Image (tube, rainbow, N blue to C red):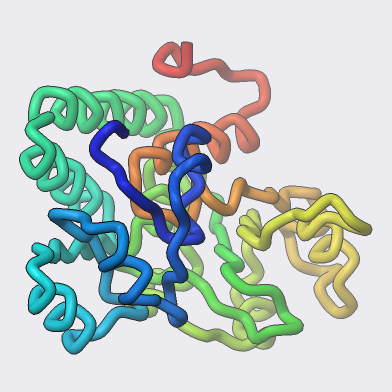
Amino acid sequence: GDLLVGRGEYCNYPESVLDLPVVNSGAETNLEQIIALEPDVVVMNTMNQTVEQVQTLENSGIVVVVSVAEDIDGVKYAINMLGILCGKEAEASELILDMETIFAEISKKSSDSGKTVFFEISPLEYGLWTAGKGTFMDEIASICGLTNIFSDVDGWAEVSQEQVLMRNPDVIVTVTADYGAGVTPAQEIMNRPGWENISAIQNQLVFGADNDQMTRPGPRLMDAAKSLFLFLNPEEALDAAA
């Protein structure tokens, strides 16, 4: 943390980073704000950033490191890369081991439940998006003993309401953020017209996941897996969670 001179507006963890200067990021990335902070290195991803932006930063004497992590192996690679970059290889290795230990324990206690799961990344009103194969969410499903109903879809994809109804998931995981006003995202799905015959609705297995934990390719994916496991197995406990 002591190496950081600024953060993108969506970077909010750990809490200590909230005291850092903020720059516009994502689709509104502001290179002038970044350059003004005079960093030696900028870490970017490829979701909204462009090659031209990288060239502009490098022309200003800033080294740009690009991190792309779609699956859990990619997350571990990124952690190791940042460990090397910051001279914290031992800490990075320890963090990766923590993740592997928790995933292994959850997988051992879950086995194959026979249940299917639908990950709702964006709600119906904005167009349904989900996580398919090759994503860390799909892997978390497998770790928790679930089968992703869209494991035949590559990556992050838009799907139809009709497809969800036809595939009839036993569990639904929503990552829509809960801002504490009105019904929760899970309650909205439970009360969604036309969805009342879905097994997940009938058995009240709709999980409102922590958006940051479940959607961001970082070490908190182990917390996302723990939360989903405990939702599915409320009587269980995890040794690695202590």
